[in-house]
Length: 119
Figure (cartoon, rainbow, N blue to C red):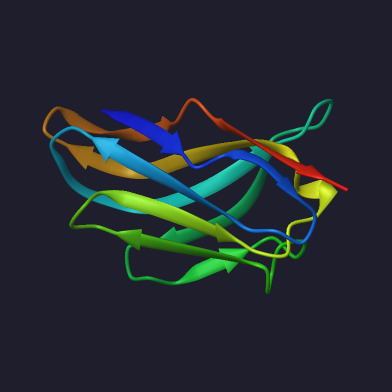
């Protein structure tokens, strides 16, 4: 099982980016998919999560600006980020929890993608 993120980059404040994460492997189901971020000198924090039924939750700092979505047929999770702020600058990580695959079950992380928002 591998999680591969894409879509990071450099954007000006107020701009938008869309992050995508593809889960490769023979996947049967995934309980929760999420995006975390880690800024320099800070702990990794949850940005947004979405469970298999579609219910999503967001950190207060991104509510109203970010939207998480998943496509279970394609084993993907995306994060649409609008109205970006310099404080959104971080490495963003994709996470898949309770993932059931052909060899078992586990929790998995992507390698991270850098998002930099300039003021």
